[in-house]
Amino acid sequence: MPKRVNKAIELLEQDQPVYYTGSHTGANLTYEAGKEMATTWADYINIGMEHGPFDLVGLENFMRGLVDGGPTNSGHRTPAVVIELPVDGSSSDVIRANAWQIRQLLAIGVHGLLLCHAESPEAVKAFVECCRYPFQTIGVSTQQNVERRGSRFGPQIDPDRSETQLNVGRRGSAGQGSAAPVWGISVDEYLDKADPWPLNPDGELMLGLKIENVRAIANTEMTLQVPGIAFAEWGPGDLSMSFGYKSAPHPFPPEMLEARGRVYAACKQAGVAFLEGGPAETVGERIDGGVRIMGGSPEIAAAGRAHSGRTMPV
Image (tube, rainbow, N blue to C red; front, side):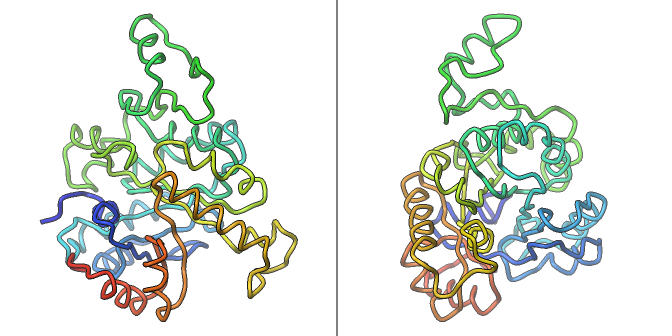
C-alpha cells in the first residue's frame, strides 16, 4: 500500500528518481484523457499552462478521469499532477496579484505547482506563502507567530525582514472541499496534508522552480534557500534566449554550463531535487550525478528504474 497521496514525493523520500510525462505547452484536458492516463508509465503528469490554455474546467474533468481510471499500479489514487503556472516569478507583487491562479488550481486537487522564471527569493517566498494555509506555521518566523497570537491583528511582513524567512500563509478556506475527494481523503486530512514538502515532512504538495533567465541565475543561491521548494531546474530553452541566442546552442557555451552548474550546486546545498532531461543512454550517469527528476519516455524511465534498483511498481 502507498504511504503517501503524492507518488512523486514518496519516491523522492526514498532517494529514487522520479519520471514525468506531459507537455510544456498545454494538454488534452478531458475526462477521457484523464481516465486513459490514470495508469501512465510516469510518476507524475506535467501540465503546461505557462504557454498552454488556462483551462480550469478541462483540468477538473481530467482530474475526475484520473480518479475514475485509477488507482495506479503502485496503489496510488492517481499519478501526481504538477501544473506549470501562467504567472512568472518576476516579483512578489506579481505573484500576489495573480494568486487567484494558485488558489483555483489547488482547489481542483492538483499535487504540485511549477513557477517559471523564478527570479528572486522575494517572489519565491510569495509563491510558497500563497500555497499555504495560515495555520501551517512550520518555517514561519517565531516572532511573527508570537505577535499574531498575542494581538488582534498580526504583522503583515516578517519583522526581521529576512529574504528567505517565510511569512504566514495566504491560502483561504473553501478549496479544500473540492480538492479532498480528488486526493481520496477527508477535508480535515486534506487541511493537514496540503502543505509543501519537504518543509512539512507530512506535506503532500510539491512546489518547483525554473531558474531560467539571467536575472534568476544571479539570485540562484538565495532563491533556493527559501523553505518549501521540492525541486528546481535550469530551463536551457528560455535561458539561452536570455543570453541572446535564438535557440539553445549545442554544445552549450560556457555561460550556459556555468548557469547549469550554479543551479545544480544550489539545489544540492538546499536539499532540493534537481530536474534535468536527457536520453536513455545517459540516464544512469545522470542519476549517479545527482539528477532526481527527469522527463522523457517509457524507455528512459525503464532504464533509470533498473539502474536505481527501484521496487515501487510503475
